[in-house]
Image (tube, rainbow, N blue to C red; front, side, top):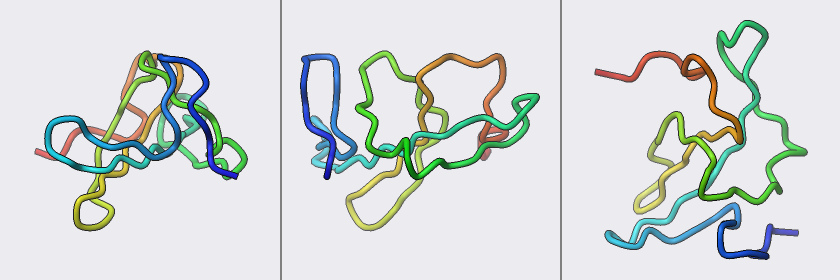
Length: 85
């Protein structure tokens, strides 16, 4: 069952970009020990993503859709590695 919107600060697992008509798919990640790398826990994918969650990386998923790798807490380092540059 997809996540639903329950409060103004929460977004479902899929959302629509306000400015460019892009769709966002949030992928909740769990940092590995020592904050080196991450894993995706399928059970956490139904979590509702709030406005205060941290986006670590945006990846194209398909035309018009971005996958945003997020955590609820701010971490000392980016668990997805350095930004492509």
